Every structure is written in structure tokens, then in C-alpha cells.
Image (tube, rainbow over all chains, first blue to last red):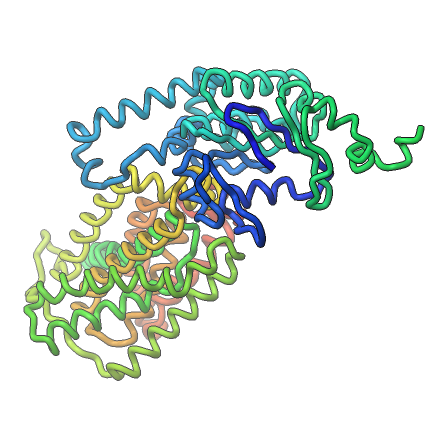
Length: 234
Length: 295
């Protein structure tokens, strides 16, 4: 499996086929048992998750992983962590040593808030906002890191049609305006065929079809894995 | 029981309570940084007092130098505890981690008994025994000194949790997975919280042993620490401070009223009642975040 720079790459497959496991292997949450993972030609197999993040890989989670005790703004600011130099000394002397740094990070965060239209909730506690917005905050936190590679694990789960369309637009814009390569895991086939350049279908850890979405979704093996064999004949 | 002596009990109780807060602060620090309830804080406090004595008596260092050396030693011991005992438990069920800290508590207490024996040794900070006069009230100087140090530590940690490192630690305690995904080294953060907590234990150990000497009974401060931490709200440093004062005052008054009737056990009774009632009535404590009770 190979994802080209600047691509939106779709990953589909039935539940339990290994989509999230693949994500966890790339981001270092689980070391893979076999195989290698290369990022821009560099072997990142088995590196610690926080270190993979510093290499420009950002992700969102299927079941959300936000800092629930903090505001939307603080959550997105923490997305800037890899760009901050966390020194107590510098923070203590904040007003003259770390100010330009801080201003820069704040500006980047405001930019992302603007981009994802989160102004209305920026000071709300993240615990209290609706799930559709939480998904968007998680995307904002990931984008705040200015990643080169972004992994979105079912960013549209539980969303209605309108919210899905918004999210699809944000993903396209992230690629076009922020030069992010995207790996998109999604169950909604219309989204995959609508915005992905290429895609891969998995079934029980096996790659059963890859290429341009229109071709993959027409592949009988993919249809069988997804809908079940009996339906193909009819 | 006349009003003056009751007020005296309350005032000294408040100061003792602030010294309880210092033990609770160690527990809150770790909870606030990694969501781990640390039941080893009592024997870490005890261990720190022995380490100070080791530097002061065996190595012959002056007491203030011995305390500084002990702070550095305990910082390293805190890092070591995380590395050896807790790192492989990161993300495991909280009950396993809780049992691990309880195991550490017992291990440190038993270990100190093996190395240093059970005789009580004095810790002399050079604080005069003569009481301070506050109007008609007699105030214990050692308690007053302890209270001042506690308030200073409180100020430091309130500032600390507003710094970048502090925010990162709060983020870790909120969600390990999310912290990893934004590039935070959770392991390093948890290690730092244990190291800071071990430093707080050193200061608590010095203050408490100057009052009651150094022996294994210092580890029983765990009970006070846990009660104060839970009452204040496990993730609230300010809560620990106020809850300490509250517990100290209630204990002070209760013991001066009830001890003659009950034969001296009223402090621990008050303590246990506070802990049980807090958990029954207000599980997230006075100032804790609401969702703590869901954990």
C-alpha cells in the first residue's frame, strides 16, 4: 500500500477488517508484527506515538479522543504541542523570551478556528458541545499541528447529510489549501467515491482491491465483502 | 471547655491541617497529571524523612544541605518509580495501578523497617519549642512554619499548572491517547509528576518529622492525605489546601471536646467519617471536576 503526496486516499472495509489497526500501526500506537512503514522515505516502523506525531503525522479517532476538561481553544492549542518548546524557564520569562513564539502559535490556532468555522464555540468546554462539533474540533486540533500527513478515522460517523457535506468540504480544502496528504477511513461510500483520488478495500487484513474509487467499488470481490455474495448475483 | 482553648485548638488545627494539605498535594499532583490515585504518598513522605536523616547523620551534612540533597534524591526516586513500576501499566485498568501504588506503600514501609529499624529518631530543624503568642492564643511554631511552607508550595503549583508544562500534564490526565496523538510524551509527563510528588513528599516529610520524629508512623499520614485530597476534589490543588484547613479545624475541635470522653481516638474517627461522608455525599469533593465520580 502506498499513498502519494497530496492525495486523498480512502480506506474501506467491513467492521473488524483492520482499518483502525492499520492507523494505529502507522502512528506508533501498536508496533506491527510484520512489514515496514515508510514516511517520506524514512522508516518509522515501531517508533513511539508521540515521536511519530513530531514527524508531521496527525490523526483523529473513531471514538473521539479530546481533552474533555478543557476548552475548545485549549484543545486546539495543544495540537500545536510539537511546535512549542515546553520550557518552564521560558514560560516564567514569558513576556520577553517566549512572546513571539506564543504569538505565532496563537495566530496559527486562530487560523484553524477560522478555517473550520469554530468561532462560535471557541471558549466552550469541549465536553458540552454536540458530537458533530467535537469531530470538527478534533480535526482542528490535528490541523493545528500543520501535519504533512493526516489520518482521519471515520470523521463522519454519526453525522447527518449536511454535516457530512461540510466535513467533506473541509477535508478537500485541507488538502488544497494546506498541502496535507489525507488517509480517510470511512463507511459512507458516497463520500469515498466523491472526494478520494484513490482507495483501498480491506477484508480481514487482506487487501482486496485498490485504485480509482469507481473501479474499486465495481470490483465483485469488494462488493462481496461489503454487501455479501448473495446480493451480487441478483 | 472555655472559648479560648477551643479557639486555640481550632487555630492550631488549621495549621496542622495545612500540613495535611501538603501530603494531599502530592496525591493531587499525580492525579492531576496522570489520573492515577497514588496510595504510596504516605510512605514516600516517610522515606524522604529517612533520606534526610541519612544525609544529615551518616554523611554529616548540615540539615539544610541534607534537605537539598534529599530533594534531589527523591526527585530521582520518583522518576525511578514511574520507570520501573508504572510505565508498563500505562493505559491498563486503574484498579491495577491502584494496587501497584498500594504495593509500593507497603514495600517502602517494610523496606525502611529493614534498613533503619523502628526506633523514633529526632529531626531537628532548629525551630524553637516556645509558642508564638497570637493575642490570647498559643500557637505552635513548628506548625506555623509548616503552614507557611505549604502556602508557598501551593502558590508555586497553581502557577505551574498554568504554565505550558502544567497544561501538558493536565492534558495527559484527561486522555492518554489524545496526548500521544498530538506529540506529547505521556511517559515523560507521568514521570515528571511522580518526581514532583516525591519532592513534595520530602518537604512534607521534613516538616512532619520535626513535629513527631522519624519512624514508620509517618506513613500513616497517607490517611490524612487521602481524606484531604478526596474532600478537596482529587484534581484540585486549591481544594486540597482548603480541605486541609477544614479537616484540621474539625479534628482540632473534635479532639479537644471528645478526647476526654473517648480516650484519644477521636482524630482518626473524625478523619474516617469525613472520608466516608465525602464519598457518599459528594464523590467529586468540594472543588473537583464532576466527572471524577464516573471514573
